[in-house]
Image (cartoon, rainbow, N blue to C red; front, side, top):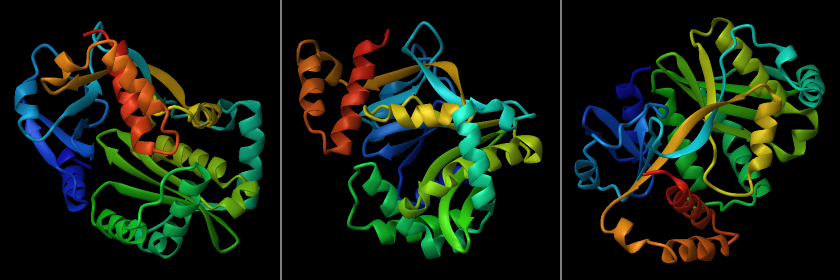
Length: 291
């Protein structure tokens, strides 16, 4: 999948896409921009930030070369011989049980359209996240547009005929980026997530045309460290990177300590707001980075 192919999908889903200094950016959240591919590095000293901010961006999040930014990590598997031996003992046992209990295979997005939305709702509820009013309409559109996107991949785990878990990934160049993993609450005892992530990663690295499977960066929000431990148990390794946040002027002048510290603390006191948690994480990253 080319960057242009992925950005066509993003545009079809209502995201804003801009090109600045030869780099493509999109807004995963309103007025917060990230580059595509996600893991490309930006030189903060030479990039035209003024142009990006003039295109609707208030905060940019990206990777930069040392010594700028803040030390962070990207969770990936890069071993083409990936197998059960790469899992820790707990994950290995659970994955074996998942593989015995579930059937894992590639699926079409049309298949997901039938049962996928209920798993989306299940996962958001289990994680204590907000369920938007347009959930059904949004995901119906997501599955329909992903079906037309080159390089979009869907895999699922089934318990008997019931959808137990699914993932969505986008292949950009030689990396398969896992962007969505959802599962059914009632079927978690069969370890469908273990079976699904293991089977997908093994297939993609063993002959699926990629050299790396990625499942994202160190998260911005707090309270999700257990998810990263789960991924690491399955063999995902922390690749060191430097995360960086750039704010549109005059925010850098206004958000000086102690106002910056106070703003983060206030946002942390809104435990039921996923948006506030992410903004707090973004500002915390900004506060801790080397500029």
